Amino acid sequence: MGGYGAYIWPAYGVAAVVMLGLLWNSIHTSRVHQRELAELEASGRTRRRRTGSTPAPVTNQVQTTEDRGNDPQAS
Amino acid sequence: MHWFANPARFMRIAEKALPWIAVAAVISTGAGLYQGLLVSPADYQQGETVRIMYVHVPSAWMAMFCYTMLAVASASFLIWKHPLADVAAQAAAPIGAAFTAMALVTGALWGQPMWGTWWVWDARLTSVLILFFLYLGYMALVNAFDEPERGARAGAILALVGVVNVPIIKFSVDWWNTLHQPASLTRLDAPAIDPAMLTPLLLMALGFQLYFFVVLIIRMRTLLAARRIRALHMMEPGD
Image (tube, rainbow over all chains, first blue to last red; front, side, top):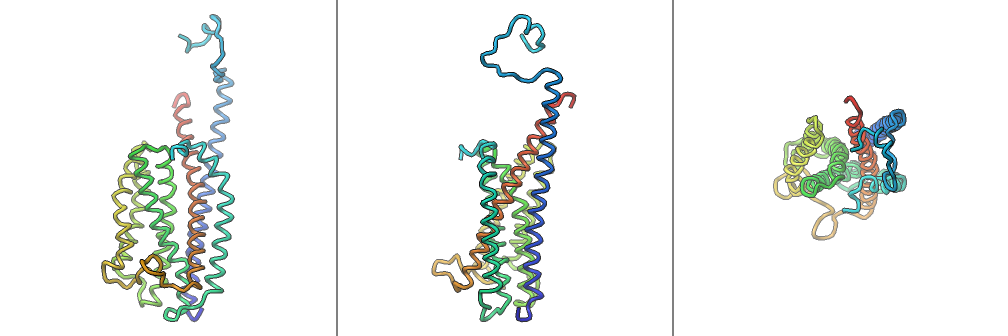
């Protein structure tokens, strides 16, 4: 490197460390968030099943008088 | 643009493109490194130190590109309320800050052997340092509010105010006396750089641009997941 290796290699080294570091940080943070989201969504589904409030398709659904009586949200 | 306004649709397309962009980034950067370090000649004046150009110049270009994108996304968020614009802006900011830091450090490493100093308070270097602080200020401001919407708005306004710095960086070498050399590529006449040096420079610039898109997609995915997590927490009973 013509005696300038002490300047050239650190320049490439800094670029590599910064770019790979940012990439690693981005992937790691993404994984943490995806995992948390998946857990939250799974626990939400379980809770809805337990409380029996799973949102059913509304279209073509006929509610009887008895159903409405059990449904606190029915007007 | 409206077609991409649906976050789920955008992420579906982005996720499919991500591996291909990543492969292209690796190939382009690899070819650029090979050309820049092994094939391209030393400069007749600057000797081997010219090889620092292949990381310094693409970093500086990306630093300005990221900020321009940050400002455009912020304007889209403030004016049209585009639902992905603030996510794109917040995802781009750390990448821009990283490229700006790289441009500053590699510039200092090039300046010491060529100018005899690591740093000089001239217009080009100082305006790039201000750009770095603008990125840091934007990131701090966005995260300074409990309500994310208010943080995004405050950050977007700062991003738009700071965009005045981008043309100052670009033209600082023409407007004021400086140690920094003027533009070699974006000139009205032909580029003042030999094709043997231009090839690795453009390959590295392409690699950095593709790297930007890879990290941008990953960070946008994270921000969208964080937004959904917040929404789910708010829906939870008893919260």
